[in-house]
Length: 103
Image 1: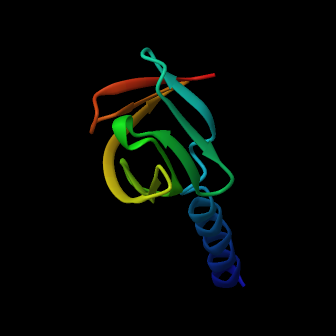
Image 2 (image 1 turned 180 degrees about the vertical axis):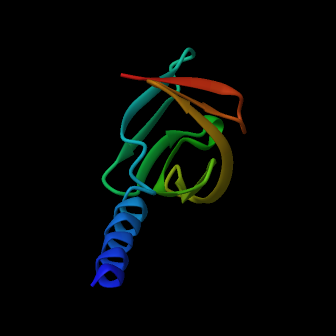
């Protein structure tokens, strides 16, 4: 009986951890220069990509990596990987060196 309860408890905890793996980012984040990153839904992202225009696509969080796949300006396929840190209402993307604050 104890073994069954332990296994069930582990399964519930593991499911909770896995469910939260990609839910750490949501909302609109803005850099000092006005560039935005918008996380919506479970895995949707919209972000400014300079001269390429706006990237619309999906993202996955793998540890401290933000993996982005999408289309920029409706034309260019984009695949990008950023190392990121989150501190309260800010995220820092260590691919472009910008700090974004949640609005």
